[in-house]
Image 1 (cartoon, rainbow, N blue to C red):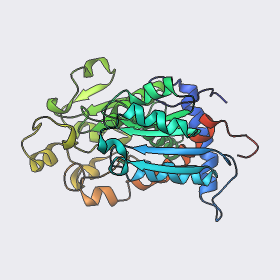
Image 2: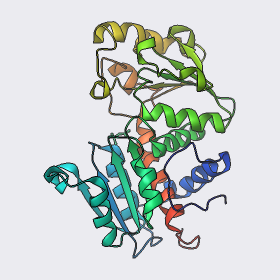
Image 3: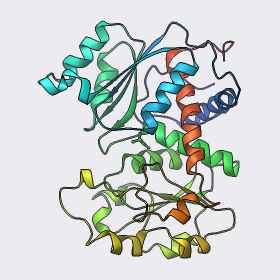
Image 4: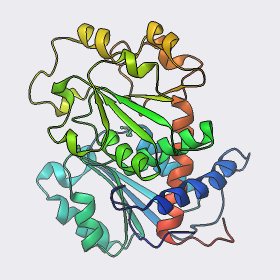
Amino acid sequence: MEWSRKDLVSIAELSAEEILTVLDVSATFKEINRREIKKVPTLRGKTVVLLFYEPSTRTRLSFELAAKRLSADTVALSVSGSSFLKGETIMDAAMNVMAMIPDCIVIRYPYAGLPARLARELSCSVINAGDGAHEHPTQALLDLCSMRERFGRLAGLHVAMVGDIAHSRVARSNVYALKKVGARVSVVAPKTLLPQDISTWGVEVWHEFDPVVKDADVLMMLRVQKERMDEQCFPDEREYAHFYGLDRRRVDMMKPGAVIMHPGPVNRGVEITHEAADGSRSIILNQVENGVAVRMALLYLCLGGSADDR
Ligand code: CP
């Protein structure tokens, strides 16, 4: 088993072997999640603190469920209930949390770089639950877990990410992860929704969606992240949906066996229609289920749970 890290800050720093270790360990935890009694004593006596300075449904709940199913104690703090609103800096808050001696801090923060700093400065484990437009490593791992489960492999798969690549930490983490395990990666977006350094990412860049729809094994639709835009990046949602949305016509063009993914939350009618999101090719809810197992695996690996308990 390839893992000796106390933290998970980014996919960029992981090797292919470490990524595959997380996926292998996740498979054993997925089995536990499907039992009637979904609890094992692996992390009994450990404390996991969830610090969420941005909204979250899937990531926050799945980390909390993951920790509880491993018998860890959890405490969650969101920005609306914290002294951040009284002007306390995030580093002061982190040092105060550390004084309560947690074993792990799971942090979501609106700006890049904080999880890396906390991992350097704190003795407990730090797991990045999304930092600005930088990385969302656990999302990429659950995405790869879902692809491997469906196709039985990752090497050679053609994965197309479609939409707001520029503002997407999910896209960045997935590109790092997919390239490390030998997948072929395409991004599809208007120029205004691509990062300026896209030519250095080592991916195929497309501005037209239809040719990619026909060739991809996975269409990963991304939300247009208006909250991260300083200016309007496309004329209107209707035009965006026409050129870059996944609708019935495009679903009918997909290869046999090809699947639809989305990290959520979904903007129905913009990047994806109801028919595509809820249809037989969609594995969106499999992604959510795998999110719990992947986060259990990461808590187990970073906090040094015992193999026997697993
Ligand atoms: N995919 C994802 O990060 O969803 P949440 O923002 O709901 O956590």
